[in-house]
Image (cartoon, rainbow, N blue to C red; front, side, top):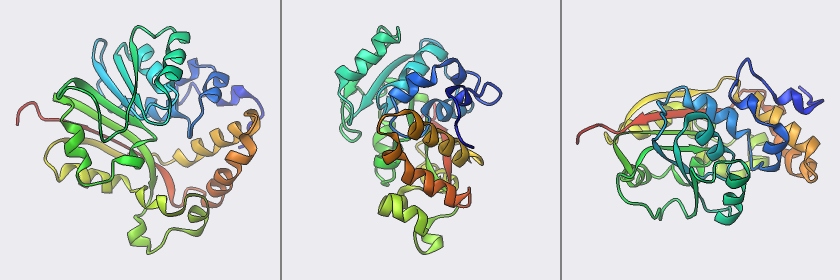
Length: 259
């Protein structure tokens, strides 16, 4: 699974929309696993239509927001705590979507938006940092219109850490205690469904998600100036895991049309 050329990251058979994007551009915006592969897969379970207003929560350096605007014709609010809004806005302007994507610097628990102001909320490789608390979904749903959609992709385990009794050593060595937030898809289904605030429409583990993550990490190690030091621990973790425990949970839900 070694990456020998950037063209190895173009996978039109599996990710036709993502394969239209220059891998070098994506590498320049890297903050973790390949965001467009995750978003394209997640969007198969969403109904995104032109003109919708979408919150990209934890948008990072902006690749997912560009993708949403270009591929689905939606209006995007890109919200992130770690990336300055001016930096993200420059990415949107250069990509030609500056008129359809607005960057907002904010933390996920203090969102500066009107209630019921989004048709959809998506979050790619970020929800694990803020969304596991029992109180978070009730907070977030306030910003979703009646009938609106929620979707997120997050690192996941094939079995709950509580069930295992400990974080597997190869994961703990890299992630530490944060791996307790890497829940199974079934955990997320229950966590959302039990509130009765949304109806879960899909909750699945990507069976080959760990392979995608490994392929991308190897590309980052090879092609980014600081890539080897930053990505080798993740490469070692995923190689040792071999899909036994690690993957991605893709979860979508819809807010009822009426209370």
